[in-house]
Length: 153
Image (cartoon, rainbow, N blue to C red):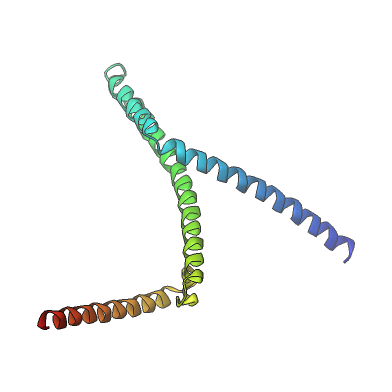
């Protein structure tokens, strides 16, 4: 390895370290924000802010600036919340997939090919869904046939 490659590798490690620090900090922030902003207190604070805004309307003669304040605030909050919600949902989905993968691996007779289904293409997922629908209809028909036989006996 020459000096240029070593320098590039060291710079890459520093950039990766910075990215990891930022990613970890965002994760902590997103988790805490989700807990806080998903609470009844946050909802109550939002309702209170709207009530204050409505009550100040006559004071500001329902001006364009008065309307712009709530529009700007809600736009900024909504924009930021999209990222927080998406981060939280991504982590939750990943955790659920891992838990389901573990259950599939641990159940005797389960098809371990079902692990990592989220990596399949939409076409493959649709094919698999149709297979499960056929299995469901076959099982339902079998159950109804057994019930009919019991009634006849």
